[in-house]
Image (tube, rainbow over all chains, first blue to last red; front, top):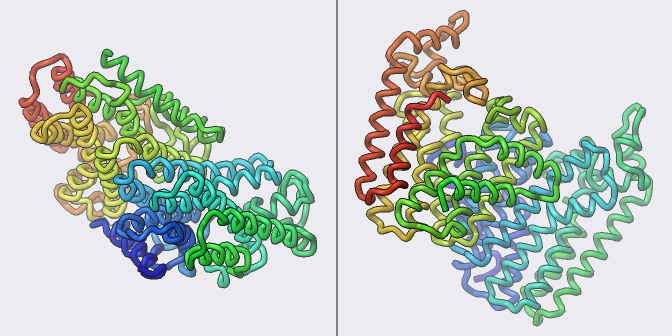
Length: 307
Length: 307
């Protein structure tokens, strides 16, 4: 099975598992899943699995689907909290079906993760822990904005939990499904974690520099909410945007100008490239293969993308 | 271990598992858990387990805790959608921490269910299915209100999924943990399902007849949202409250008066008593024991309670 056949299998599982007889859940779930998205987390899992000699896609694909459903559930709920109206180039579930149904659709997707993972006893706890971390990271983010405490340290802890933990989990699940040694599991975990950090830093920069059409989702949300890379790095090391911009006419615009003028963007790319290099370095334990080269390529694209 | 010791163990597990280092999640989770609640679902599980000879509470209590956390997560999210400000005699999570944190707290609790259940491979799928049913039932309810289609048939389907499925799951999980035969598992499933239906019918009636202080949660929500027993039975068999009360001065008050005057309340109690009797009848397969008598008592209290 090629990588793209495996990814098609993952998509088929996701669409099949959300096929509820409750129309709104089915329609809203298919709406967000059909829109695509980058599918980077299941692709990490499948490609690590391949790189370690895994060939039983019927065994591995449901786990990859579960990982992507965790992410999908979280973005459906994010769009409620952030009032995001565009997601994956389409109106968000929240924008079409409203808050009540968006909340229930997110719950439904989280529950389907749990259903998909039920047969995988030893792997179950990994994905559960990553999902806990994701919710904790989202909560730390909202709390840091509220408490005006969006420092660089807090930012790093937030992105480690809300993004990098699930990336690490995708990679380690791929390795465990392939029956890898603990040494290899740890190494691909380092790869996944660093790719995840780089991914989120670039995401936050694109939120500042790209427009909604290019991103396929509402842009500028971080800035409007006083969080993200802008909040942590735009205040010249101060506590955060909210402090830095007090008593300003159009504070968000000023902050954005300051960031785009200053070194924050360059610094972010520098960080992301360092993380990418650490990720790729961790793959030294894997034998050369097309799948290994694909993992290296994923790490590169995460940094070099423009959407 | 006595029943009340076992229930204390369940509470301890729930409190321990939500002990995140993220303060808001920890505080909000403890707030809702410390408030108590009836704990009827874990009590069903523990009592069925005892009635079938189960004695290993370290094995059974985490599953009972997981069942109660499913319910707790769902009420935290319900209070967002319904603007419920009182829950278990306290301000709701939504009322204290706001929508964003209430949404994340519910997600956190759902995720902790998944973490607690990870080691229980064969039981996992049962609780996952019941949780899917719960979310489907909540969605059907919101859709029926929106589509003005709150018929008696739809009402029955809604309460079967949003409430009775989890009650059945609590009972069958207790039986499976005790290593019961399929015949016994099915029988306690019938017991749990019918107790769950009766519980929800009485809940809906109390929502109409009791006040918030007595219930420990915001009362009259069903009526204000055009749903529940009132919507299904208050419209004289018509489509629902929204149709029945069109062009009325204070439509909800009129509907409530009509229901309290008419036969709907008596009919509801009649239904609940029949369901209770079916539930108790299903227990014939169990040998007599203090735990069996406790199960019969639970079914009685579900119907006879006033809060």
